[in-house]
Length: 345
Image (tube, rainbow, N blue to C red; front, side):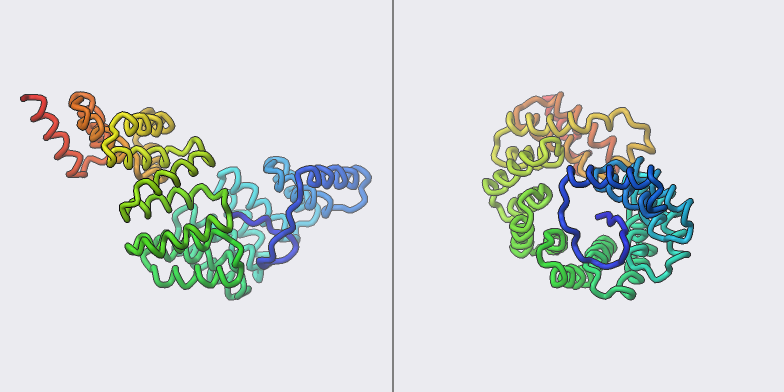
């Protein structure tokens, strides 16, 4: 969650503004700039309006111009960091946050956004320190609790994670995300009933949250409720038709129901979505698999489906692809050996 840093730190939610209203703001601030009526503030506010429309290059240009006119306004640097982060330029984003924090070292939102960037870069300890700083400055910063909890969960401290997610819920009970993350934490500990409750609460707060359907389906599948899980995956794919992971999980469940043909169709669709992985060099493939760690499993499940249909040669092709992606997995090696023996018969 990126927070465009406006005038103050804190967690008060902004009133929703329509795209047309943002366009009106752009026109109004452009007129002010042309008429030289409001100096750097017009550039800053127009930058915010561009950012709300997802036009980050234009936003970055305006924040940069505002900083050139008034280099002591930390807001411009913080929002340059946000725009650069949205463009995927994380190291450049960090530089802007650091410059802004030199000017405004008491800015909770500055530390919060820098923490987000550090977390994206995999620098968890530094991110944790920034979220701690943000919370020391603003103890009611719900998003800082949420993202600190995510770091705790990722680094193996589930009790601390749960405490932070629950604090985030207290501060912002209408935000679906803490419920989703608490569900992940509970599922990882094997408490699937409680995880399902949390995913359901997240869906109640945000019925368009595709991830909540996807992960509730996985929790339901762990409890053996395959049909309910399939319903959730159908909904997930309505919301995000290009979700390879949802097709993968649907294929897995159809395989469990002994419907090899439909399983193969879903697993093939998942493979089509991520087929670019076949053409990546080794370094980029490692990065790709950090985001999509289930990719070897996709080929393994497809191999099982072909095996179920008696197509051992095709099953071998897929299990070997799984083995290339995860060469230390003994399960894949065992299936490959079994398929070779079946071919000899």
